Image (cartoon, rainbow, N blue to C red; front, side):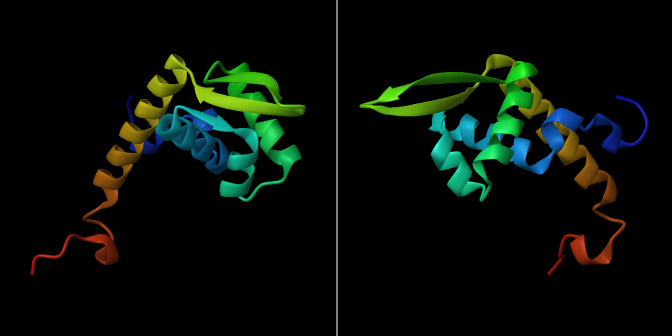
Length: 111
């Protein structure tokens, strides 16, 4: 990465809902669509669109099936998704490190 640390942010991953989907899936292993919808406070249609973007990018795996007679969708993070999430977190850390001393409100306290 060259230039400002913000250049290292991935547009697919960085969008807040997609970042939320990836982090929850990384924590949980496999997560139900309804749980994501409630946790991220999204409509089903909006969540579906973001899941499609992440799926098409190869960052998540989507499994559809049934629980009893109810259709269910489960989302898990793929190996490529784990790599992309790790890179995004590294870029965010670099961004924070670059600005930390420049803004008085976020300077580490010395007391």
